[in-house]
Length: 142
Image 1 (cartoon, one colour):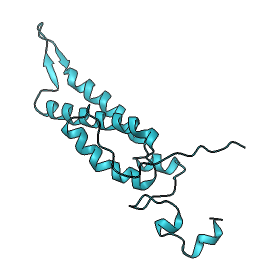
Image 2 (image 1 turned 90 degrees about the horizontal axis):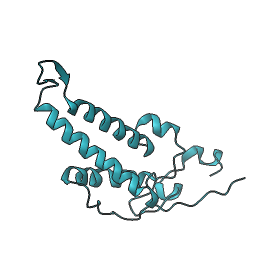
Image 3 (image 1 turned 135 degrees about the horizontal axis):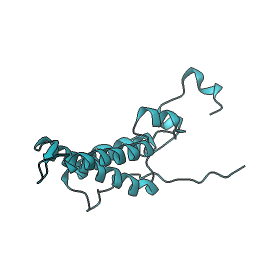
Image 4 (image 1 turned 30 degrees about the vertical axis):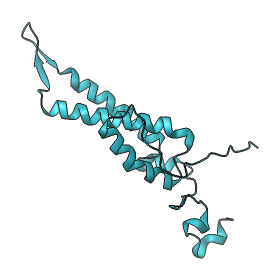
């Protein structure tokens, strides 16, 4: 039997890292409370969450650039080639999705996770703090 390591969830808001631009910082401030209160985000996950926000800002930036440019470009010899922004956007989108899955931000990834007890806004966990229980509370052994 393996002992479970206790992970510590942030008890309050953590400011976004300096490497994020305004788009990334806005995403940090939007999703941080959601992930913290869901009990998914721990202090050890902040670097992963920062990377998620970095890929989010990159996808948004590349999407804007693609909206203003052609998908196909004519080379100096007259042939057509895919705009390099397309592959950059596709790769950043793949990495964004991978980070979303790691953080339980997709329905399928949440279904596969052993979800921790949600936290209340005051940072307390557990069934009583989350206001759960009900008629099936005694059946689960919790």
